[in-house]
Structure formats: C-alpha cells, structure tokens
Length: 489
Image (cartoon, rainbow, N blue to C red; front, side, top):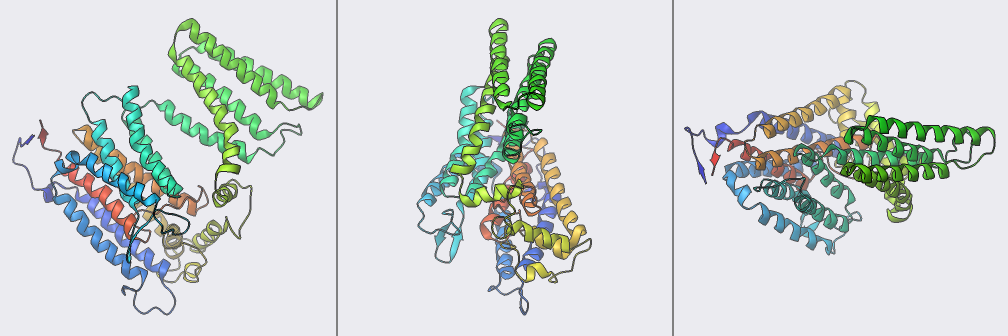
C-alpha cells in the first residue's frame, strides 16, 4: 500500500530529465553512426525505409513511444508483476531454443513474418526485475546459502537457455549481475576469484608453449601455479589476519621455488611444474591443518579457492581446444597473440582498428569514411559500429561518445543510491551493470582489447530488439525512481 506524505508532484516533473537528455543524445549520435556505417555511395535518401538508417529511425521512434508508456505506468506494476514478466521471458527463451530459423549460426531470433525479435535482449530487464523482487523480500541475505542459491538460479537460468541458442555473447552479459551482488553485500573474494580466473586463463594459455629461462618448464604453467600460491597466502593475511603464518608460508614457497629453479638452470634441467604442484599440495595441507587447529572457517574457504584455481587452470586448455567452437577458439587465440589470422578470425578487429586509426584526431566527416563506405569492416553497423564513430568523428568524437556513456553510468549510480527501497536500488544497479558491461566489452573488442563476443553497443548498434531492450531497461528504472517519494506499507 502507498500513501503520500506531501503533495506529490506529477510523474513528468519527478522523472530524471538529465538521464532523458543523455538518452536522447545517445540516440541522436547512434542514428548518425548507423547512417555513416550503412551509407553506400550513390544513395540519395538516407530517410527511406528501404535503408538501414531509415529503419533505425522507426526503431528510435517506437523506442521513444515505449519509453513514454513505461513511465506512465504505476511504478508498483513492475514490483507486482516482476515474476510474471520473468517467467514469460523464460518461456520465450526456452521456445527459441527450438526455433527452426538459424541466423548467422544462432537460434536466438523469433521470426514473425518480416519482424524478427531477439528474446535475449528483453530477458535482461526481466531478470533484473526478478532479481530486484527476490532480493528485496523480507529477511533476504546474500550470505544465506538458500538465498544465494536462488539468486544464482535467477541469473543462470536465462544464461543456460541463451547458450543453448548458440548465443554465447548475450549469455555472458548476465555476469554483469555480479556487480549488483557485490553492492548488496557479497564478499569481494568472489569478484577476486573471477578476476583471478581470467588472469590464470590469459597467462596460462598465452605462455603455455614458452619455456622458462631455457628450462623444460612451461612459463605459463609455472607462473599460474606461483600466482595460486601467492593469492592463497595473501588471503591468509587478509581474511584470517594471521600475519606470522602468511610470512612463513611465503618464505617456504619462495625458497623452494628459487632453489629448484636454480637447480634446473645450472645443474640438471627438469620441469619445475612438478615441484610447484608438490609445493601447492603442501600449502593446501598446511591450510587444512591450520583450519582444524583454529576452527576458523576461512582456512577451508582458502583451500577451496586453491583447489578450484588449479582445477580451473588445468581444465581451461581442454575447454579451449575441445569444447569451444572453432570460430570462438580462433578469436581467443587472435586476442592472445597466438594467431595472426587476419584473413578469418582476426579480420574484423584488424579492419576495425584500421578504420579507427584512419580517423585521426578530428575524423573524416559525416559520410566521408572510406573503410566503412567500402564495407571493409564486417558488421560495421551492428557489433562494430564504434569503428564508424572513430573513422568519421575521430578521436574527439569517440571521446565524446565515451564521455556520454560515462555520464549515463554515473547518473545511474546516483539514481540507484538515492532509492529508499532495496527493490529500486537492486534494479538500478542491474541496469547500470548491464550498460557498463556492454560498453566496456563492445568498445574493447573493436579496439582489439577484449574477445569478439558479438554484443551491441547500447543505442548505437542497428536493430530494434537491442534498442527496445535497452529502452525497457532504462525507462523502467526511471519510472521506479520517479515514484521514490511514496512511502510503502
């Protein structure tokens, strides 16, 4: 139930117009970029519905209408029907798995005559609503095993369905929700574990075939195992607050590593990885012994971290070479510098970087790009649209676009933090986390800094599903924020 403490202003006056202005600016620059990316020399009418720039205007117009409808609904509607919306989108995702229409190797599209919709784009706001609903229930705590398990299930269920549609890139977006969990009290060690896994994968795969100091030892394996030991010791210092034990472990591990490394270099060359494995096993046994003696649970958690790290590292190579699709494996190898396949896996990124570099400081001007006009960059009006910004608007235009996205993220953080109820705060952080993930990964893959996983740049990439999906995400939050002055009972 809701009541008013004061004379409540209208929704139009309560809505955050700064965010609306940023939204309109992004839509405007996005349409200009679609024009530049899809324009062909000789086109006479960029507003024609037969062109992509003309159709994008349709998507923009319908998005604005959708946004207006969303802010006119009662903010309690989203709280009340969160689970129903989530369940409906799950059914659509499940049905899409059996979709006979395969587009570019993916079954993620529902084809209704001339209309194509991608349920995965709409499942993001549905998942955010369900997550906000569950995490705002009375007595919820992310530290309770049952609550944490259900929270994970809400996020991972749509991920599994999307992966079964062969749309891995869209599925990875759901990892952004872990930033929400961190804001709501999840221990930072979970995020650190994720970062550590990325480090293990990059170093282990990148330097696996490189010998360490002319010994038969793999530099990648040696470094990863050493990092596992150091990370575990650091956790003893931070989470168990046992400085003396941490220093003892550090001294023993480093001494053993140094002695056998020098022996391998100057006496008998051998694979030191075996010594590292034995050292790691001794360290794990030492942690278990300390846990039994002190009955401090954190020692067991550090043991799980160490064992999990080793299991992940030794399974990563198998996953890369035997589980991932050939094109996914090629993209990772190109990113890590293991493959210079500029004709296939690295072609998109290579051409994109040429286009961005050719723009210089001020760019070539609207519709004057050569790389994009001559269609050198595949998917240049969807996943790689940022290269059009770089070529036509140059460094100044690219920086301006990134500053707009930064302003949007900062504004969303401000709105999320001022929510009086957990429902609004959780949903707000879900929205900004998804936007942050999309911008970081999309721009990163265009610049060759992150793997090419095929996700759109919000409000820029051509297409109705992504534009509508981002509009749903943003305007539902703006409506929730506009009703923040109501007292719920």
